[in-house]
Length: 616
Picture 1 (tube, rainbow, N blue to C red):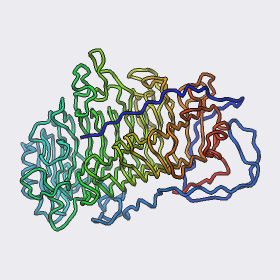
Picture 2: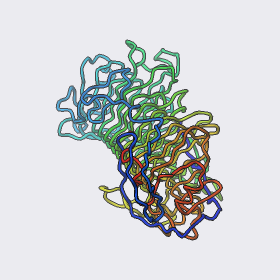
Picture 3: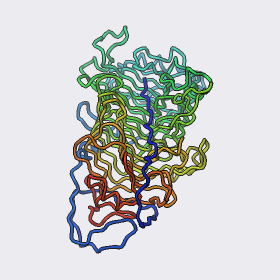
Picture 4: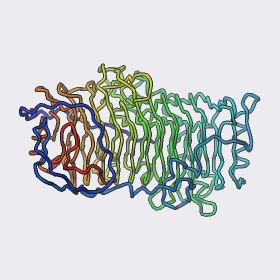
């Protein structure tokens, strides 16, 4: 159903950090975000520094060519609607070909205050969805108490569901019931707004709230999109069957737009039950805020041109599932400018290998804000001990990739989430590849308490305080968790990665800022990022940890700016750590890592020998 994320445990290395008289201090600095290729350099003066090495002669440093760049993600021209099979990601400014906006007129209006019901809406949609030939707007007004369905729409003309002009539309739904579940969905999920086997649908400006279950029978999702091409059966009256949108006029399943909606309190409350053993650590306790799931194979028709943009999703309880998920045989998709906060598992996820032999691929995850994501109080990740479900090491990524390919994670803000931005492949023997991470800001604050609440600040521009700060194991993580799984062709540049957490489940576990993790990884380039710890007295946050040596390929770690290094004599693993050694100073790390990594990195600034603009 949904994948399980168990973070690997990194106990302290146990080798005392090597140290010199070098003292390191610093303040947070913003990186120069990249733009070009290689560079020539100036004559550099020898500087007596605090932990940095500067060249004393004219040097030319050329950035190694990354294995994935922005050119691998062509985006639709602004003002143009996506076209099936064009291989372009929808443009964030005009994802449908027009700017995101409320409709100015309605084809039909349903007003709950005058007696209209969800059943009336669903009946109209079922009777008209495949006869429309132009954009058709179904307007809602008031509060509806049952889900809205768009099932088996194959007509290419756009069907938009939105509030009536000058009105609001709320779906206040209550408990999931059997009739909410389309039998052809892959994971058995029930959508508050359910788009199944369909194409050409826009959901704009709705509020979907209080859609819940308590147990393992149902999987609520605030807005659910599902298609299937994993079966040869075309008979629509039996299950499973190939989605209707694949079967008419040789058209694909495409053009699904989820825009500017508000979703809150979508929950499987079983994940807050710490006294029932069958719910503890159960992979069958699930829910989603927004789910996009395509069951298929690499050789079947992919769901394409799905846009999840401008939505706010908050206060979800999703068990072992995700707040926003893009899972399976999906291509050319956009997840942009959403706000996700106060969830008890992963904020947003791109997934491969769970729904068949395919990966979510060729997608842009951009401009999102994700904060206060923590599994500490999620029984779905608990462990039964002495008659009660106990917390396990927290492992929710703010933005997570599990098995996706050609995913661009760009210009997002991720704040106080257990794993910041995390790249992984959980499926045994499979691979995640060509992952570009650029221009993001990831901050995990120190926190105030071992247990929740653990107070810190919310992201800039967001009021209030975090209650889960300090429970974070990484700001940026590259791993292949599944047995024999691998991850490769990763390029991270121009990011700010900060991990100052002090209250992870066991402080004897490492809490690195950047971790090149376990499993098989290769062709990784970590270039021109700001990587920051808590400062001179920090015992727990290595700035860079290498949990497993690379499995092959060309791997580059260089031209980074290391800030707020520890100088603590009792630091668990210094500022730089491998499985067998740890180092307190950058100079020692440069001399001893065996790969030539960070030869041109510095403390408290970027080296003048490095390009001012990275390859984009």
